[in-house]
Every structure is written in C-alpha cells, then in structure tokens.
Image (cartoon, rainbow, N blue to C red; front, side):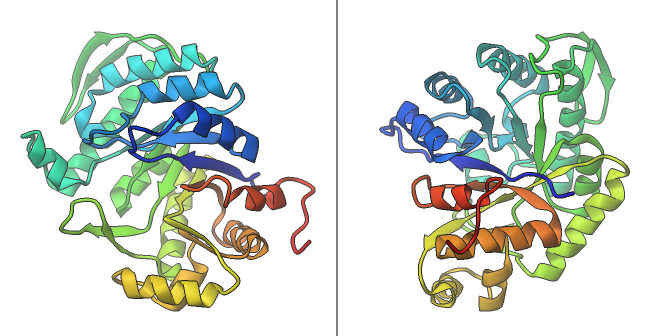
Amino acid sequence: MARPFRFGYQYGFDPTADLRDLARRAEGAGFDLVCSWDHVTEGWTALLPLLAMAEAAPTIRVCPMVINNDFHHPVHLAGEIANLDALTGGRVELGIGAGHAFTEYAAIGQAMDPPAVRKRRMAESVEILRMLLDGEEVAYAGEHYRLTGVRTMRATQQRLPILVGVAGPAALAHAARHADIIGLMGLGRTLADGQRHEVRWQPDRLTATVDHIRANAGDRDVELNALVQVVEITDDRRAAARRLVEAVEGLTVEDALVTPFLALGTHDEIAEHLLACRERWGISNYTVRAIEEFAPVIERLRDGATIGT
C-alpha cells in the first residue's frame, strides 16, 4: 500500500520575510511541514525561526532541511532539537546532511574533508542523535566522536523522525538502516559558486538508488523525500523542460519531464506526475519552495481528491 503524501514548504534566506505569515499561509495551503536551510548567510538560521513558525501555525510540523553536520556537534544538536520538540509540542523532524558548500567552509576557516570522510562522520552523528533523542545515556567511541556517559533532554515524540540527505552507496546503505526518511536530490558535483550542482536526474539512476535503499533497509519502511528544485505552472510542460535544459548542466528534456525533482505543467499534470513518481519509486514526501502555486496540487492529491477536474 502506498504511503500517503506529505508536503513540506522550504523558505529562503530573505531576512525581511515574515516567517510567521509564511507558516500560516503554508498551513492554510495544506502543507504538512515548513523547512529551513542551514548555510552561512546573513539571512535566517536553521533552528530558532522554526519555533516562531510553529507557534504561528499550530498544526504544522517543522524541520531543518538540512543541518550541515560539520557545523553542529551531535550532542549540542540533540539538545537543541529536543528543546525545540518540547516547545512545539512534539512537531519536529530533523534533517541532516554531510555538507557541500566549500565556500562556506573557507569563509569560516574550517577544513573541508573529502566527501567519504564527511559522510562517515555524519553516519556516526546520526547514530548518536538517535540514541540521545530517544533518552539514552550514550557512551560512543567512533572514528570522529568520543562520548562518555552523555545525556541530553529526550525528545517529546516517542521517535522523532530523522531525515538523512545523502548520496553514494555506503552512505545510503547506512541511512537505510538508521534514518526514518531519506532525502533524495539527484545532485552531483558542486559547481564553482559552492551552491549549485550538476544534476543526475536520469530515471534509471534513481531506480538503482531506490533499489539500493530498499535492499539495505531490510524490513524497515523508510520514507523517501524528494527536494523539488523548480515548480512551474504552465500549459506547456515540454517548453518549460526545454528552457530548463538550456540552463541546467547535464539535463535532458525527457529526464526533466520524468524526474521527481521538477514539477512542471498544469496543477492536474503535476498531481499526475507525483502520483506516477510515487508509483514508480515510492517517493511520497515532497519539499517545494512555492506556497500558493503548489497549493492546488496538494488539494488534488489529498484523499478523495480527483485529478482532471
């Protein structure tokens, strides 16, 4: 049986944005979560704004998406997340990644290890976070972290969901065994600006990734999330795909029309597209960066909604 859809709205860096208003609008539009970023920027930070948004929208869940593990020690992060969970009445999900923006590491004078090292460090952090958020006293001796008899506040939720955003066979295998949600992005090499990436949105590549996750998850039912990079409401999906191909390195028109990381077309077409992605890959959790434009898609995909009306 297919998982029900869940939808997150990820807001941007703009320090003038009214986050409380954004949270109320997202809640009214049917979103399940509001999500922050974690970057070195003059805009909003990853955690504190989520408390204000949760207070403004009393049913919505909140999630940093995603915390850069290298910038946050897991003990300190566990305490902050558990505090946030208590203050929101148990409405927090934790997204975490291994870091990618080399410009930010350079800006703060922090060495940036190779990807394999960063991913192994994050894997250890995920294990520590799980134990601390579950209320355990943690003794841990790993390659990157050593803890002796550490406790933090326990999460309010029985099991606070952890989303791991990662790529690569070893890291995905670990996430399949330990994460509640795996964030899929289909991104490759970080480009020169330190933020944008090559895209790897070929459907066969995504199928292989999902098969690898399922093979390593065993009997665990891991939720799959897709971070949607573009929402474009248009009567001509193919023309929108062609425009993106001109701007995005490594993208073809056919891949743009199939990938879950783009939402192009009419509201009906996007709803049908996400239904097809859930059927093909089991992806039921989508994060977008548009509220009003995407709200009719959510309406169409909720239980009992019809497509094509």
